[in-house]
Length: 472
Image 1: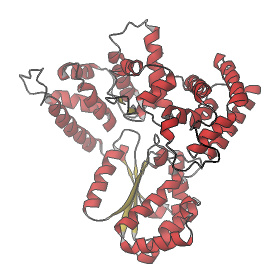
Image 2 (image 1 turned 90 degrees about the vertical axis):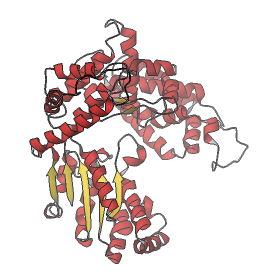
Image 3 (image 1 turned 180 degrees about the horizontal axis):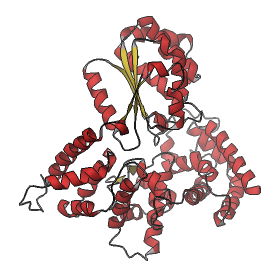
Image 4 (image 1 turned 90 degrees about the horizontal axis):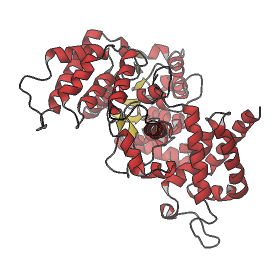
């Protein structure tokens, strides 16, 4: 096993993609799973082993033969426990075929896992000796469950670790220099609105900015996006970076935070600092993008927040350095890197109250918006079905829009993370009372149609736990 260990922003994902491309080109890549917290199907531990098994079966006919037999004997194996999945879908077929291959699992820390030691690593520790010809390439932040997993006695002697943030700083600095020089020069190739009379960027500019990155590739990548602003000259933007006083070492220290602070300040320098309405809307939009459980389109987000699409786009039009903002309301807004939501939801790091998102408060507002939306849109027989109809193959989106689906699935999760004191609590209790009296069965109907009744049970448990806290 090989653990690529690094702090957020140190370049793990970029290295993993490059490594995967090379191993694939050499014919040695058996399967891969790239975890990502913002997607339900990429943060679910129970999808890792089935996905890897599918990749291996697609590549190796012998593996496919054994896997098909395993599925025939137990068609529900893909929905079984992680232990049975690993044994039946991977270990036994690999033992039978004696395949020599490489398996990649990227960003394991992005998956939902509440165990003290990583569930995936704990299981691999039990079986690793049974598949000696397979090499695992695993990346992840050095968070406690992953550290504990790799320290298990069965894994420790089998594991090689690269601490990415401890690589020779000279090598990292040189790589960032190359990256900055290539990307910044590429920015001005098609800019007919600027006149570069001297070589740009200068070696001094690149050296200075690279030194401020302090080994964080996310810093360098964010600088490039900041300088690429279509409404400013690259020279002007790069000079702003060069004038920043602080350097960057790790996420959460002065560097990336000062960069994010500057991006937010400059993105809103055209707005009166006392314009509370603008900054309130900015926090609502950015906070929603940060805290939504799954990404939804801009159009759906505007319905959820009861805002026009233009009210979504306007406050963030200068934040493309930290947000992936689509060109239409049919796509979602995405976060460029996890370090930004970590920063903007922490008042110890984001010290400007105009921008800082108070997570419990914002979860409360999202819970209210979800409950209000369901109050307006839920109704009996929402799909206008004839009596005794089945839910199979319904044109769901014709009757149930994405926003209502989101509200129905995740309102209770937002409620469970909101504060148990304050004015929002009273409003939520009133909406909750109306919901239970008038819309409970209609809500179950929607969950049944979208095939998430199990989620409804968890939602009710979340509500029960929150109500107990409120009553204390």
